[in-house]
Length: 65
Image (cartoon, rainbow, N blue to C red; front, side, top):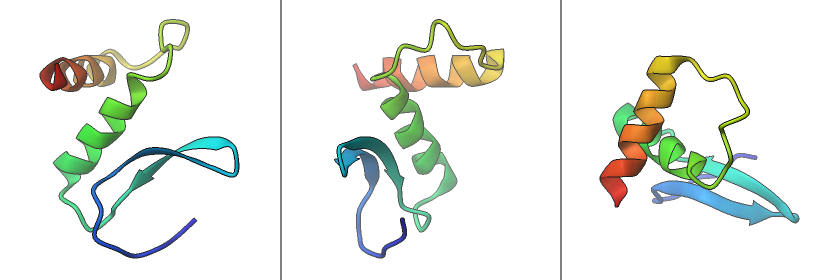
């Protein structure tokens, strides 16, 4: 799915499927933070995630609180 607009990004439901929308025009750090914050809605405990990435996700979601 592609489109243009002035938006930050985040998760939404499209055709009854949950998707994460990212604006490629935003700085990379902002895009990574959006992805990490969207991951908080998923149970990641059963998935292997590289430790550095897991730490990034945990740190980013902790900053939101």
